[in-house]
Length: 213
Ligand code: AP5
Image 1: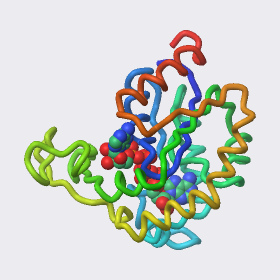
Image 2: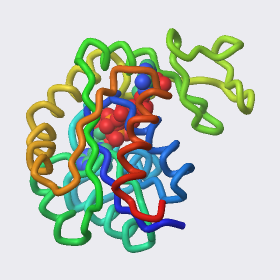
Image 3: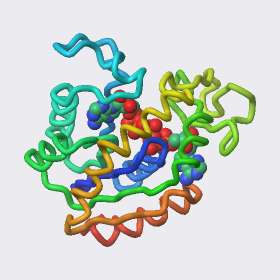
Image 4: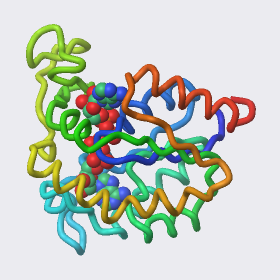
């Protein structure tokens, strides 16, 4: 297990989940993703209501709920790649307090492409593998190539909710990218290429930024 602390930023649909899974595997670090953590706790009662109420409309879940999830995950991990957090300036300030980052990578993709990727995404309800109706279709329609499970659309991948998520990103999360632009190891990567090409660029950055990886 290596000890790199990696932050992957980018808009919804930029490929953060796709790339983080590969990086975690290849560099033997933990994939920390607030999206998946919240989906697993959608109906958890908090003083702010349930995460579901926010996620289904594309809004951000309140900071105290998310901060607690991230702190517990970071405390338990040696090396990690963090995906989906921080999403506003307050979360960024909290993250800076609880850990030090070795590398920050920002994936850039146009809004037009993001809309196509997200509305066409399908997920296996059994094993979670990602497909895309056009870019990476399964061999048999609506069936997972890996485990034979059924493929479903994520509740927040409808066109209307995706538009709202992209608006929230521009207004609230874009300033987080600006916050990290002055980090000692900040890298912007073109995410509008094939997953393999994007992964190759990320690997090059990590191999030089994480000694001993
Ligand atoms: P979350 O699950 O984090 O969603 P997101 O940031 O909107 O990101 P996605 O998972 O949709 O996109 P991704 O970049 O991971 O793309 P992927 O690799 O899947 O958050 C969901 C909700 O939870 C939020 O709206 C909010 O309510 C709440 N939440 C989460 N974190 C929070 C926080 N910190 N604070 C408050 N609330 C929070 O790829 C997308 C598609 O494109 C796939 O179909 C994939 O196959 C395809 N694809 C990927 N790469 C490529 C490529 N290079 N070329 C072609 N297709 C590609």
